[in-house]
Length: 390
Ligand code: ADP
Ligand code: MG
Image (tube, rainbow, N blue to C red):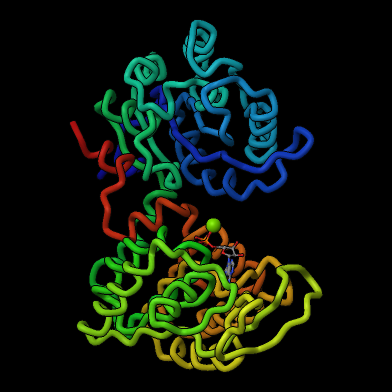
């Protein structure tokens, strides 16, 4: 795969697919982390006097124009960050969009309206892609978070253009995630949590090939505990995943992987702030596990201390509620304090690390939730594959 610094972009009309899927409130950008993440590639292209056409999706308008999901406020915000005006095309494709693309000059920036206002985007429609391609000489993708989807702007379009490559954000993602996927250092500790076992099974199965230790927390722990016949009370369990859980436990044993499940739990009867909390080894009926317990916290911290590689996806508890965030914060600190090469993937995990105040001590926090999981599970991502095809 080529990166943008190896493409002939000088003075060319460049289509840059970015991830500007940011939260908006009252017509203003509320959190511009994703916009800032695209700045290195944008600035590089502007320095090279490219004529820059930017495109992104925002929210889920399902193929229709939804006024609240217009990218117009993002164009204004980007203009402030760049210190130069950013033109906005109210059309994503069509005559007016084509005219605006034609009129941009070297060093100019044009942002197209929300890609997903068009039904062709999520359908990977070639006709829609060829409208996007009109007037474009070079294609660059820097929207890592969308690369696991075969959507028109990251897949069909990339296949239509021969001069193409990835931006610096994707470069950073691919390099860092590859370190955890290919030839990682040992001891390798995989930490998995969060709500759904189903999402994490492929990652678990693929990464178990590398991991020396697996630490499980969050709601998914209860599916495993139930599979072992332990009492889980009213905790969240995915009944239809019990067999998968049994298989993973068997595989871990056969491969000699240390597979740890929480030994104690912080439990409540009702999930709400201020609820009465009890620490239980065996969860009683009427109670739910909402966080790993203090004993588990201590064991997990020790198991992280000597790690050389840590891959973490999914919080240890319902960390959004202060009283249930203890285990997650403790694990975040342990990862930060270890000298391991550490990768955190997943939106909630990234915000948990931020909440623990240790973001800058993590080697790599992935910007893509689903995309980073699929990458780490060894699946080829359609958006990256399309950059390689002729
Ligand atoms: P990520 O976004 O990092 O991939 P997930 O989306 O898989 O993580 O999981 C995060 C969610 O899991 C959070 O909303 C959190 O509240 C929830 N969660 C964690 N532990 C529990 C639990 N014990 N019971 C219910 N939900 C939980
Ligand atoms: Mg999540």
